[in-house]
Length: 338
Image (cartoon, rainbow, N blue to C red; front, side, top):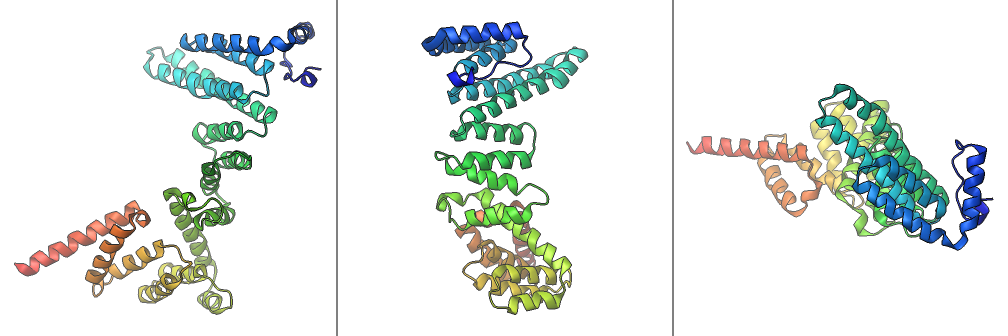
């Protein structure tokens, strides 16, 4: 009866009498529910200022019950529980000198309010499925609070499918999918589509997407390099329809399995010539060349130009290696002068 009138169901834990009383009340207020919801929203704000989280939860439950199709009520309720109440007890648990109280906060209150926030967000997503934000809040909780990239990716994908979803949510889906063990192939397809800017334009090519693209291609190449023979990998590069990724698999095999640096360099030269290959292969080729004393100086000069032109393709480890190379060349140059 309540759902037909646009209200959400009351808690199944309530007694039959309580539910009947609540239902009668809801049915009687009719057009005043918006006003009453606003009053309880104000009461929730006051309870928030008082850090009375039990009352915040109770008042938010009332506002979401009265106006379940109003996404903002669910959003604020989830935020108050999963972030504000959770953070309050986390900070308090770190400062209290009472060991028992600290344990209770960490093991009872914090998990409880985190779950309450997740419940509010999920219920809201069910009531307002056309809103991207509530599904995104669920994903944020799984990502930031539970560190569960698999569930987070599922909800980010759901959020990204809403008509008004901003592009960054689909990127969040790709980023979290890339962290799911065993889903590298699926993640690569999604990340590759973003890298090639076929979905949202150039704004999709963020630093995270670039990093994920390289990491996933390395994973795929290394997997093939270890499971396929040299002949199989060479045949793949010679076949019609071969791509730069087939060459990357061959290059990885030569580097990691055969320990053939010169052979790998030649393969990576071919990759760099392919206009479809990501730009980070240019950095990789130069890094390999820098490992050869005969090419070291020229490789350093080319790396310096590339770093100035495209700093985004250099990872932290690359910068460390570049600094070591620079230091080594300066040291050897000074030694020759002396």
